[in-house]
Length: 91
Image 1 (cartoon, rainbow, N blue to C red):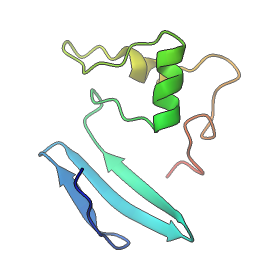
Image 2: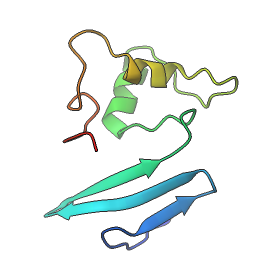
Image 3: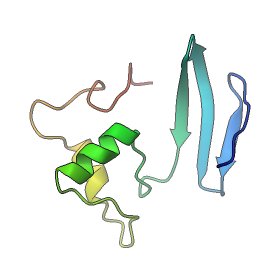
Image 4: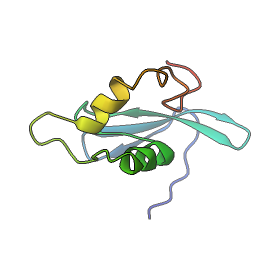
């Protein structure tokens, strides 16, 4: 595991396709902004585990079809909104 120290508004690059930015720090919480190609699934750990528990499939897109991303973009009725995605707000 690589451990890095960053301050607010600083960024980390993963390859050439993923950028992680420290958006805000409030007490013991750090808000991250993640920029990645739409074909790259990005989930909080608990959402990832829930997708797997529900029989969902998490895999990199080969043909541009990303089932896990579709599940997040088109959640079942009653699971819409930023709170389901683990966001305080949509920026």
